[in-house]
Image (cartoon, rainbow, N blue to C red; front, side, top):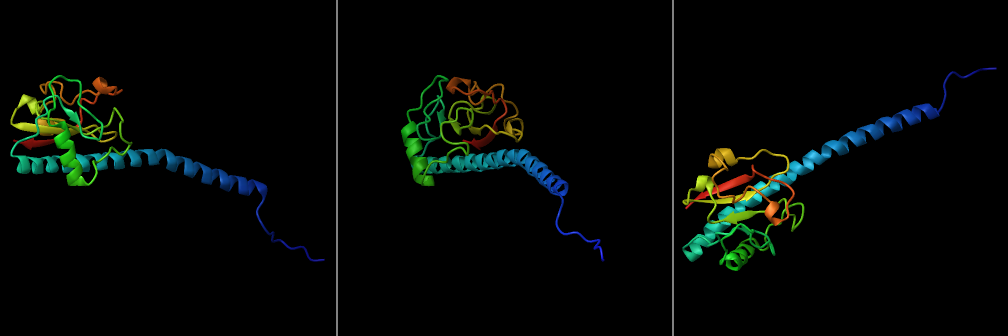
Length: 183
């Protein structure tokens, strides 16, 4: 009688071990994937705010002036003005122009109406209160702000882009991503 030393298949312990290892790898991948998605959303926001700034330059070319919006305006459909005083008589004109320029207004990657993440324009609040500068700002999830490099400081901007609490937001983004356009 001949006894074979080879076996066929896997034992239950071996299968459970492999399944456990695969499960742990998937879990680690999912946990790290959140950072990648947040960074991807930040990248989209930065690109959108640059393009919005360029589009407002086209507004200036067409109308011969900067949009009058001393109260600040959220640059998304139905976003409205920020409750920071002032007014935005050019809100509809600006939003219509931007919609025409883009085909559709850019919407934050988390979806429209998110009170923590939105694109912002204000013709009054600027870098260090300098009236010759127009600021576009957006809050980022994972990346550092460029406000100090672009503006020098965010302390003297009349409260323009440093708080979302006034529009129901839950964060105080004192360090937004800023695009500066010299007037």
